[in-house]
Amino acid sequence: MAITLPYRFDTSGVWHTILKGAFGLNAVLLVGILISVLIQHQPLKAVGLAVMELVVFGFTRVFVKFQTGSAGTLTADRVVIEPNVLLGIPLPGPKGTYTLDHFAAVRVELRSRPVGTGAQGGPHELVWLVGKPGTPDIVLALTKSRAGQAVGRELAALLALEVEEVGAPREIRL
Image (cartoon, rainbow, N blue to C red; front, side, top):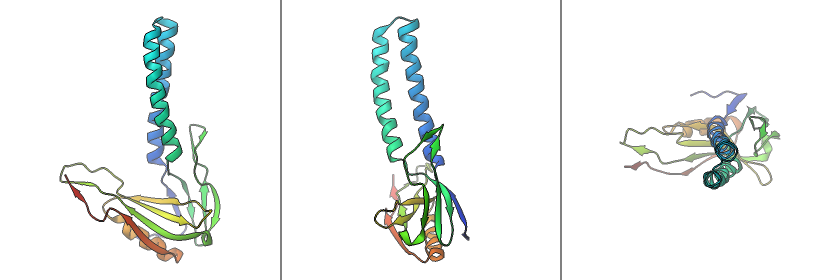
């Protein structure tokens, strides 16, 4: 795989899908609460739905807080990160322009994947641009089947940064 600069990246799609599902489930539960109270006049049903909504809302908050996706453009001297917005809601995470002297390395985060079960799953690797203290880490690529190692090496060579690999050194057989 030949990577060239400028390199356009968008790793927000997976998180946007997860968050759309979470927001949708919150909306369905809220509508269910309203129907239970206003139309069906069943307050106990509404209380049960409200408890479920509180649990789902808690998970949604965690998903929003810890999502790592971003989109932007990496050039030879800087990375420009677009604001991460979903359905008009600004999501936390890096945004703005950072010069490359704010970054220390390219990190390939390897993850275990199931083998022999027919399950594919993914992604199995995250390729990060690792910020120095005070600069956020940025996910540049989501890859599968050890492609992240090659992507990480190419990006590190293009940016004159060190490459590091962390995570699962081997696959887990189920």
